[in-house]
Length: 119
Image (cartoon, rainbow, N blue to C red):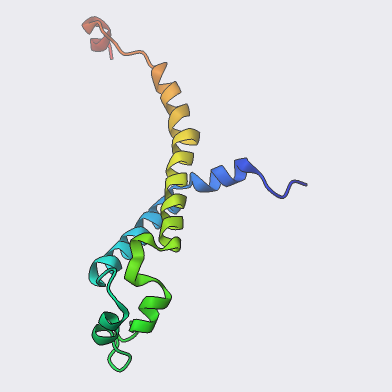
C-alpha cells in the first residue's frame, strides 16, 4: 500500500472547491491587510488597537503581532497560502485544461454554409 501518491495530491489540488476556498481566504486576508495598517512600530499598534477596547471585540495589538497581521503580505502563512493557490491553478491547468484543449482541437467546424444549413 502506497502512503504518498502524486496523483492523489494533484487530484486534490485540482479541485475547484479548494481553489475557490483559497481565493476566498486570500481575499479575507487581503481585506485585513487593508484595514490594519502595515509595517508600523509596536507603539502604533498599542495605541490604535488597545487591549481595553479591542477592534471588532477581539482584535488587539497582541493578536496583531502574534498572527503577523502587521506584515500580512510578507508573513510566512500568507505566502504559503499563495503558493498552495498557485499550485492548485497549475494542477488544474495540467490535469483538466490541457486534456480538454486536446479534445477541442479535434472538433470540426463547418466552413461550408450548405453543411451548416442542414443542421
